[in-house]
Amino acid sequence: MHFVSITYSVAIQELCRWGFYLLLNRAEAGLNIVSANPKSPFNRPVFAFVSGYGYALMSALVGYISLLVESIGPGVMMCPSCPKATLYFISAITTSLFSLMHMSWMMISFEGFSELPKTKGWLKVIWVIASHYGASFATTLNSSIIVSNGCIYSIIVCLCIIAVSGYIVALSLKSRFKLSRSQQ
Image 1 (cartoon, rainbow, N blue to C red):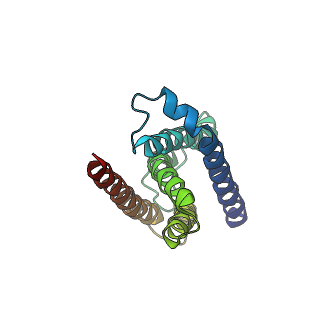
Image 2 (tube, rainbow, N blue to C red; image 1 turned 135 degrees about the horizontal axis):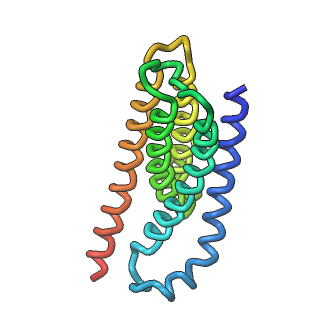
């Protein structure tokens, strides 16, 4: 059952990410007018980062609040795959990692959407969708009683995705920096 709900929820989140890009794209001219440096090539990445921060905050609140409500009960829930760690602790780490991933995914996807229909644009969009599915399905290891220390594997998968996504963002910002230096 988890796999069906993960499949639908990631698809809906990615459709909302695309819709949010379309909305921000329409508002970009007005946002550039009120920004401190209207002609900066870094405005779009800043808008994407701020959007990703809001998206990550919303996702973290929705994902973690239901678990916090369950913590009001009389006992402590232990993580099934890592019985020495509480589910609250593992979920807090996972929520933090997903927040970082959402910020980088938003930056990568906004750049990818703006580069479509080029191959680079498609590759960035596909990376965001595939890594979102990968990270989400990796979290099912937290509740696995078959995979020993599944929570550790889940965290490692998320950290690897953050590392690759961060590298993609750094390359993007580096190319924008070179472009801005050449225009001066």
